Image (cartoon, rainbow, N blue to C red; front, side):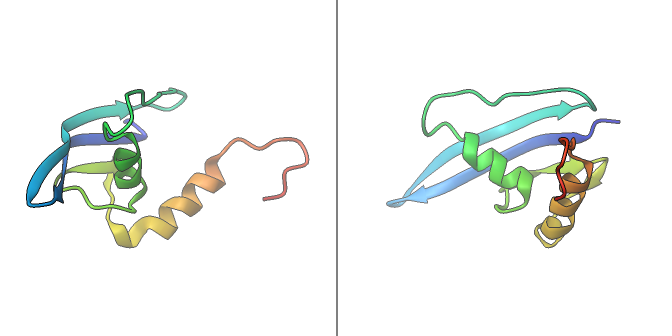
Length: 95
C-alpha cells in the first residue's frame, strides 16, 4: 500500500472573472522508502499541490490518501504529528 496517493486532483482559481486551471487530474503514488520531487516552472501549481497534500488547501475535485485513508482539513494536526513521529532521527535529535 502506498504511503501517499494523489488521485485526480484538480484545482482552479478565479482571477478577475477568469478561471485558471492550476492542477488538472493530477495522480501519483509514493511508496515507502521512495523519494519524489515536484519540478516545474513558476506558477505551475507545485506549491498548491503541496498545500492540498498537507491539508492546508482544498482541491476542487479528487482526493489525497495517507496510508490508504482519505485526508480532510480537520485531520491536519494529526497528519503533522504522524509525519513528525515517523521521520528519520539524527543523533542528538530530541524533537
